[in-house]
Image 1 (cartoon, one colour):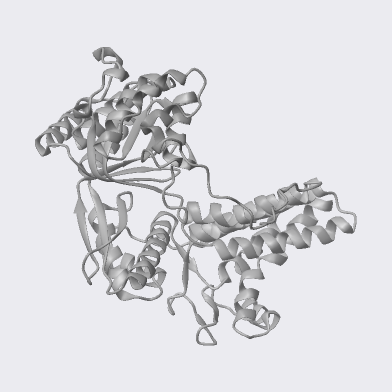
Image 2: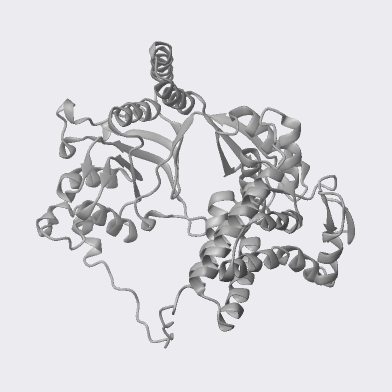
Length: 493
């Protein structure tokens, strides 16, 4: 169930509660039917077929949001930001500046006012190679300030070739981002061990693209960061790379899916030259596919990043506003991608009509009936939490004529929810049901669940083991890896 909620949040940026409510309801109803003799596999198939039909109905009911209309974006963003017009204005400004496919980051500002600035930067769709690189547990993100960047074309698996560079970076006291075809084996283990020991702040990601396109994109990253891309045809080996070959950026943000480079140290003339080269290639190509990929590269290198600087008077207010802005940004992005639908659980309730078209029999039909019943669960939960009789509210909303009509729990009234500003991104509703159905049907077809028994804290735990001899410098770089015992020569800082 946690997975259903986390995946929904990961994809759509919201909808964790809806996913949890739906997953629990589907699972409980399914258990009742299995206890009565239903076949779990047939039940599961019926659940998934019904969920697919409802999702199709949700997407058909969605109203698109014009990505070029600042007014429409502002309306959606304001609602997503708990009806805060300041958040709506800031997000609308950011989306208009970089477009719906642009990169928008939320940072803690140094003023009391919240504002948007477009900074030089780029993003590519590759995330961290190990969750151990994460620096922010709450949002599963790795953030590196004033970072050095190694841009390498080939795989890195031998830790020994990497050690001289790691030693130099650690002496410089800078964090390091490694971009390579892959980082694996003892090389990855060495990075993880030293990150966890606090010896080196580091993160590794795979290079974006494939083949010649990967080489070109690494060149783009090098231009933005002012570094030297290490290509095999240049004859430069990893153990001979110097600090001066590395790129630099004021900030790097790495999630499980994306890497964002902010304020790279690249020369403006070099970046503009690279962009001009890409524009020329766009003009010369006859392939629509190549043209599309080149336009993507151009957008990444020349588009920049919209940075929202959050203003607040106190640290507590800062954290609260930043979290709210991040959630509102994700919800607005989802609305731009797949449109909006009436909120308050109404869309799922009305989408139950789509199930009448399904031609299912036996236990599969029972699975579909489970979905039909649980589609009222979010609205029922909203009403119950407002101190009302959920069954009464659900029945009244079901009999209302307007497609946008529903229950406003905040004002305890029945009204047009869209006019009242109660809307949801269609993507949030879709992913919540999709993930809830997937996880619940998996649980229903599982004979048993295995978990670890929590260890009791006896209060006798001693202090953590020391690092031996003042950490021995980066002698720990070997981290006990096979064949790395001869690296003790790194201890000296």
